[in-house]
Length: 110
Ligand SMILES: [Zn+2]
Image (cartoon, rainbow, N blue to C red; front, side):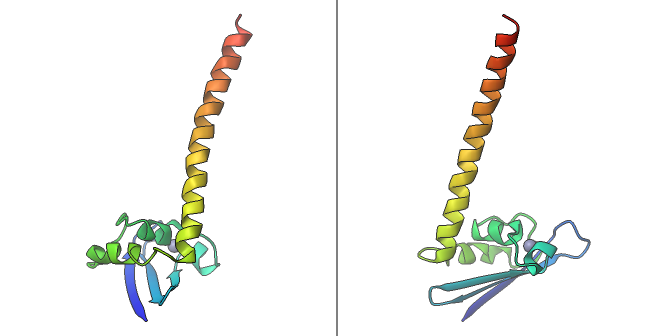
């Protein structure tokens, strides 16, 4: 079992403890933030899996790429890819809605 732990500064005064454990193709991640403790999605784990050191305040932030390197071939990678694809789609739809609203506004002034 390989384990890496980071301290991530979030909205609370004390940093969150974010722990990653890899055993073969099994990958687990825990976070002490409210969402993480309630079994919900949190960006603290997602960011580190994405290779981002945003908010990492522990002196081992150079180890973040190791965790990102644990992803390939895991079900966690598949789930993350689904979210990234949906976020891209959301961004595209926001632009499309904005364009449609401009078109509506122009139609109203004709
Ligand atoms: Zn968290």
